[in-house]
Image (tube, rainbow, N blue to C red; front, side, top):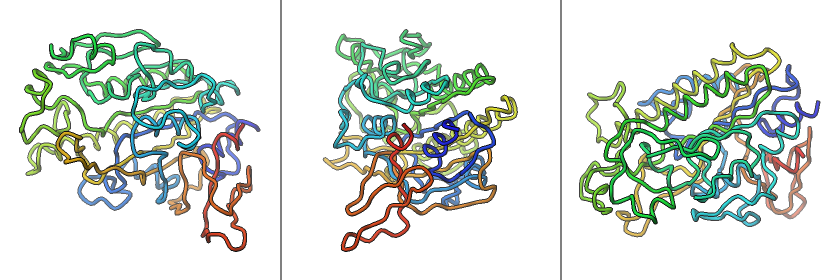
Length: 389
């Protein structure tokens, strides 16, 4: 029963008291810069995301979920470790590596016999060392190691289990000097291989290859974060131009939005939302192919969202950037409530201990405030790792 309790606490905050399967497959889907106002299940009227809506309808929707930080690297770190930024070692978007001594979700799942994989944006690694996913407890890795490299939708290579795998994209000569190569920074002038699509394809391969074994999959998308492939002048000289399309979302096509009278940035962003929704829907549909003893428990979360949908870079923000931590979160379990439920309790991807409160583990997870302390109304918090370990 330990596995069942573990998954209940990690993915549901005791939402599901008993799961039909002792060892459900767990897929944690993390979207980058996806705001709650971008999804139809949160009231978005223009862009429809039916698969994410069904995920919420058949599971749960959170309205007060917060990421651990306002920027990429510490958000990933806090999610993997459950540590508050004050206790963690990765606190900003520098090139910090994940300490091997840190206990992570992947290590936890490995401990109870799960196959583990990180596919997408690892987000906490520093090149040229490519072993950070293994330090974190992942058996397999495919994607971006460096957080900054993940800003490119059309990179020159991806990393598979520590090895560089060249792609057909051509990188600007400006980014071929030693400093940029060392830090895995590049901008494509010829765009062939769309990395988010490759990452999704690898996700399907991993699920199908492990359909008879329990697995924990951390599917970390780099979309809808802004990309670096903005225009040729940036690529050729390393300087931004005044091109009004320079903050665009580079996508292979505009999907069903080419005729909309929207700025190019918004068309690209809308297409990215469509990609995320389609891919999540197909991943959840794979449940029918898997061993009945290991059904899929899926959780979708975003982090560090901004208000605009597309990104405002430091260079054109006059010293100001819109950053945030309030973000959408939906989840679906094999034996969930079976009806639409909205959770308004404060939850987060980092450990939390409110003033005057205490955390009760396992089946008691309500935070109770002592007399004279700040009033907490239906605040439900679990420290992922201390509760499960």
